[in-house]
Amino acid sequence: MYEKYLEKSKYVDYDNESVYKLALDLKNKSSDKIDLIKNTYHYVRDNIKHSWDAQDRRVSISASDCLNKGVGICWAKANLLAALLRANNIPSGFSYQRLTLGDTIDSGYCIHALNTVYISELDKWIRLDARGNKIGVNAEFSLDEDILAFKIKNKGEIDYHDNHSYPDKRLMKVLEESNDALDMYLHHLPDKLSYDEE
Image (cartoon, rainbow, N blue to C red; front, side):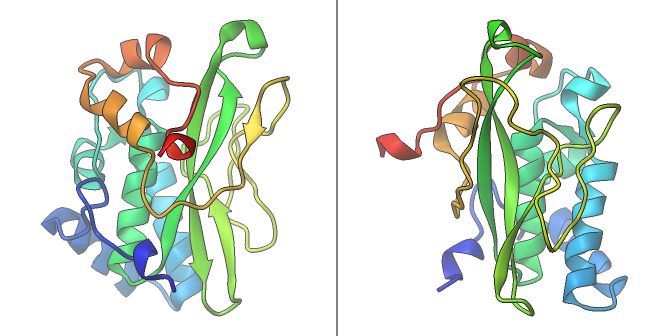
């Protein structure tokens, strides 16, 4: 039932040595599965910088790429969180929001990525947002509610409440075709997902 949420892929490459080693280290430092999920989430949220916040032009794509560079936009950070969880046999997927780039609809829209995680002890899926916190952004680990980086506040914004086993192909294509994360962030972020077109 959850097998597709445990698969490795080009983007969720938990068979990479660095990713797998980190997954094992996090497991060894955790008291149980829920603690492991929390520790893994905090690691990606707090230790991998968001490209825009860090003003880092490097583009990371796959989980291993994101981990090795230590930076990525939310799409890459979601790949890393999914990979680390799947490496420890914890089903994880991808969920999305359509948000304004700035504070108003005039700024345009973009797609924001976060993760879904299956909590077997509670037989439920939760959503976690590892984008990275800063002033005005405060995502947290919660078993009871979504405490995400962004709330829907403007016309045209959408919280899809979706759960996909693989990252959106359109977003991955943008990453693969980009060589400057800051330019990509300002000028080339899609505002639609590809799932409905498949």
